[in-house]
Every structure is written in structure tokens, then in C-alpha cells.
Image (cartoon, rainbow over all chains, first blue to last red; front, side, top):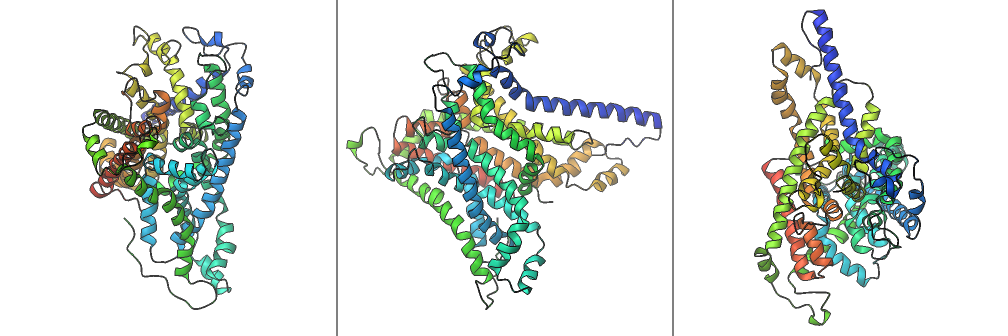
Length: 291
Length: 307
């Protein structure tokens, strides 16, 4: 939208610019507060002792900070184990999803072959698929195969449900590479396979990395399958542990500890976001917007 | 949906695979995974839904009952309620997210300093685990010590604290609020990326013709942005229609059945009642509901999802 005021009067021009500028910063500021405030409130809550939590109205920041919540989170429950489970499951799911997805994305972006449309329709169908529609047969199969409470029971569904994300993001990245690359490789005597492994893969490392972040976050956050296929406390992943987080030997809800646990499990995500915000935004918008 | 089918790849003679063969080999693993985890299991769900099968009573076996479960669904008040809850949640959340997201996208497309901070801020609600977020909001909405009550009370909007998530009247609205918080920034991000592709000259030309900002918005921005809006809306609508994590953790579907979405009712039927026959029929119903939404977006509204 036009941001300049096209009036002839210079001083009015500047004043209007000033007011618009102020309103923009006000709006942007409010938006940033809208996004961050609830999480900052949890950070503040995580540093409150039970007594400091139960005040009316609530204290914005309680002094002294009650660091013990961060220690107690790991006491009397396998919370560290749960975090490790999530790291392993999300790590493997990401790795395998990228391997499987990058093959398919390369084919879809750069090669002509029969059945291309069918594959695209399948990917689209998976992206729209409600997970709840398949938990019953999956649960029965996993029980029969003895996979309940194993990480494989999560890794398989996560690879599948991240396929649309991986394939779409990588296809967009692969398409951006100039076609001449493979032509040149062919001229130099490469087979299509070699063109893929020796020329394309190294060049798409940034795209693959972006995609890895997105898949990791998806797998880290997934709840429905994790809740269904994991039913003992030491196999839980983070979302399940967080849902079932309760006091140890105590029936009141330990809000301070829940908040501390929330901060602990959100930290990896915040670090990813801070370090790779530009890539994440590029990856998220790559599929949705065709420039 | 797809691009027109182009004839199979050139079959070049030479060492290694031809282009067309390589293409098919490369997509095979993805096809296998998707079939094994999604396409065969949905058929299995349909098969299960044609049986009476309760894990609580294994001695009753698994007799075939045809469409009995589906007949039962149609007169199941709890199912109709979950359909209503899901639809209300989806329509309300997504429309607010679209309008708010559009306003924010227009704002973010103005020149200002500090884009890095804004980008980070946008990504925090998006990246946050829904379960974690739901517990966080449960504390914010707490009836005794929740900061939401304190703020509204302090500003004089309410006379007494309200148990937002424990009240039949408010629980669904509280959940919508949490959903809007989590997904509006993302919506704004997508729309703002779309806005950046609109050439500036279009606005300059129409400004010469004396078009107002509002008119420009409806005659330039919206038509050009329509494909982006439809795709963003499609996926947001599907997410909302599948809602599980947020409601399961924030309200547990309650109080009563006030926030019991299709996914939650299905889940409870399967894993609380252990009724795998009827639960699978509910799962199929949820599947059809979601597919109907996709159909409307793609065939009726013309959302183009081909990448």
C-alpha cells in the first residue's frame, strides 16, 4: 500500500508521515506484545514459589526468584528421560523424512515420469488427513507387532505425516536451481543418479537444513500418536509428559513446576527460532506463495 | 489439481537409469511410507467400523454388523454435539484469524525498523508445543489466580472472577482465544509474504487515478492475494477441524461435552470406552467431514494447492 502522502504541502506531508510512522510502531509493538506476553508470563510463573503464585492480583515478577522449580521438575518423574525420548524420536523422524522426502521432491521437481500427478495427489491427501482416522488400526497393528511403547511406533507416523512438508518445501527449493546444472553434469558424462548426488544435493544443503528444522519442530510437538502409542511414563515424549504433569505425592496442581517444565521444553524451540528465523520464514512461506 | 500429464520421460539409452525410471525409483520410498501409515490403515478403519468390536469384552469376538455403527451415529446426540462444537470452533477461530491476520500482514508490510524482533515474535506462538501452550493458557485462565481474570477485573470489565475453562458457556470461547493466539501470527506471516509479491507499481498507478486506500485493498490486494488467502484458509480450516491437542489438554472436552470435538469424541470412544467398532465409525465420520471441507475449498472455491 502506498505509504507516502502525495500532497504538495511539505510540512503537512512530514507531519502526516510522523503520525503514520507512530501508528505503525504502536501497532507493531502491540502485535509483538500479543505474541510474546503469554510466554513471558509463564517464564515469570516458573520463578514463583507456591505462596507467590496464590496472590490476588498476581505479582508480575516475584522476588526472590524461586529457582527450585527448575530442579523439582526433574525429581520423582522421568522428565529427563521424556526429553531424551523426544530428542531421539524427532531426530530420527527428521533424518528419515529428509532422506525419503528429498528423493521424492527431486523427482517431482526435476524429472519427467509417469504417475507424477498421482504422487502429488497422495501427498496432498496426507496433508489433509486427520490423524484420528487411522489410530485404531495402527494401534491394533502396533500391539500385535509389539511396537507399543517403542520409538518406532512414533517414528513411522512422523515420517509419513511430515512427507507433505518435506516434499513441498524441498520441491520448491529444488525448482529454484537452474536446470542447466544437470545438463552440464550430463555433458560432463554424469548419469541422472550422479547428477543428483554430486551436483544437486550439495547445492540444496540450505534448503534441506530449513526443512529439517520444520520437521523437527513438528515431531517435537506431536501429541495424538504419542498419547495413543506410549502408555508408560518412561516412554512418554515431551507433549505427553506435559499433559500428564502433576505434583509428586501431592494433589494440588504444581503450576510453578508446570511453568518451569514448559520453559525447559520450549527452550530448544526458542533457540531454533532465534538462530534460524529467516530460514524458517522462507521455508514456511515457500509452498504457500508462488511468486 | 495437478499439472497436465506430460508424456513419460525420454527413454534415453545409456548407462544407468533413464529419467523416467529414476523418477519412479526415487518416489517409491515415499509412496510405501504413505501407503503403509495412511492409505491402508484408513481402509482398515473402514473395515473395523463395519464390526462390533470392544476391547473390554474380547469374548464377544468381532462380529460383522454391516452399517449398524453408522445408523447408530446418525441418532447419537453426542456425535451431533461434537459436530456442532467442531464446526463452531472452526468457523469462529478461522474467521477471526483471517481478519486479524490480514490486518497484521498489512501493518507488517509498512516500512519499520526491527523486523528481526517481529519475526521472532511471530514464530514463538507458531513453534510452541500445543500441549504446553494449552497448560499455559489453563493457568492464565485460572478462576482464582489467573492473570486474565485479574486484568479484566482491574479494567472493570467483570465484577467477579470467571472460571473460563470450567464454565459450559465460556470454555469453547476460551479455547478459541488460545487457538487464535497461536495461529494468527502464522496467518499474518503467510499473507504478508503474499503481499510482498504484489508489484508496487499497481498501487502507484491506481493512486494516480485517485483510488482510495480502501478501494485499492478491494480492487488490487484481495484479487491478487486470493490464491494465497485460499490456501492459507484451507490449511487453517483443516487444522481447526481436526482440533485435538488444545481441547484435550485445556478442557478435556468438558465441562460435560461443551468442548468435545469430533477428534476428541472419537479418541474417547476408542481409548476410554475401548469400543473399536463404533470408534472407528466415528473416525470415518471425522475423515469424511475433513474431506468435505477440502472438497469445498478445492472444487467450489477453487483453492489451488498444486505446488
